[in-house]
Image (cartoon, rainbow, N blue to C red; front, side, top):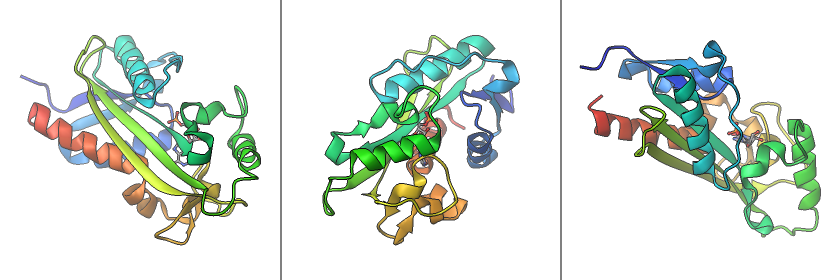
Length: 204
Ligand code: IMP
């Protein structure tokens, strides 16, 4: 018999992500706790794919807490850069680089890329591991297609949002309300797909 509410650790210290995920899991009798509540050490993101990194993060959180874990790994892929910066998005301009450093480096790398060839997309993989040794983690993926702008605009969001043009909205993702962004975004898509799998897999 599974104890209710089931406590689940989120392999992220980002309060915004924790709130977003808690809200989406609210009717599932799950209590989502950030890994910072347990002093979980940061996992090295050594994977070559988003799914590998998400699993590394979830396994690390499950191992240190003894709880089931949810982790996400995300980034931006630019077609003209063969999918780069991809899994390196957070450290594109170097270890410890700021969002602004990363964004400026990407603008510079794509300076010569003409209009019509500036396709980019945000991607997110979200995993759920029942325990650190779970060999069949639930895995969900989301992708949000758009284009790379030439100049940053908008003050919302984070990371590469100011230079990500959302075709259906005619603005950058930094100009969307959080509600609209969650509805459209790679992370929202992945989380909804993960929730559907959780419901189907374990009868929640
Ligand atoms: P992580 O999923 O926290 O490892 O994030 C990877 C990096 O991808 C972040 O540091 C951001 O630079 C970028 N990124 C991921 N999702 C978004 C988003 O929704 N908007 C802007 N940048 C994002």
